[in-house]
Image 1 (cartoon, rainbow, N blue to C red):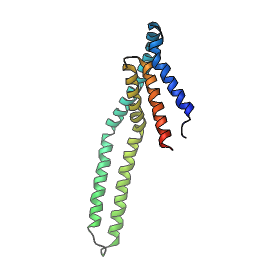
Image 2: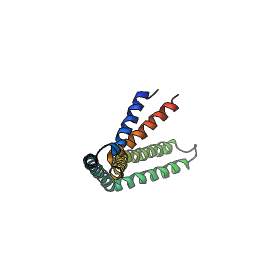
Image 3: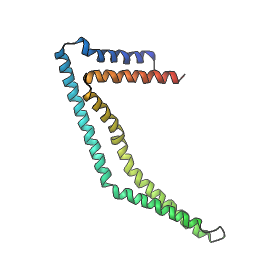
Image 4: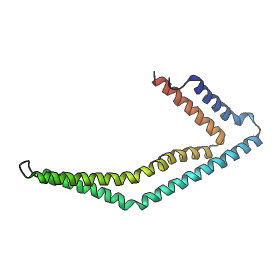
Length: 167
């Protein structure tokens, strides 16, 4: 089994404690804890926003390189069509030159795109996930601690589902 039952139980107990915090503690404790966690998650959210904005700025700066990559793909397609228009009885040098030119254009366009996309994967991919989580935690009516408890409960459900499907 991918997850032990005890691990799933730990997540469920943590979820119950965090979600039940609102019912069993005085208002001053809840307000203090919600303030501390709200401040922390707001800081995380502002850092994520900064990373996402920097990534979008990086993308804006590289728009000419992206357009050149697509131009290289278009030219590669035209070279491929041009090379295919010759029949097999014509000179083999045409096939060699058009094939090499095609490979050069496709690989150049592909490498340029990958040099732009890979630096954006983590800030935009993971940043988007963290943005959604921190937005949820800072805007829940019961407070960030109850929101964390709810997320722990969701994680325990996912773990249980993985265990059922792994059988």
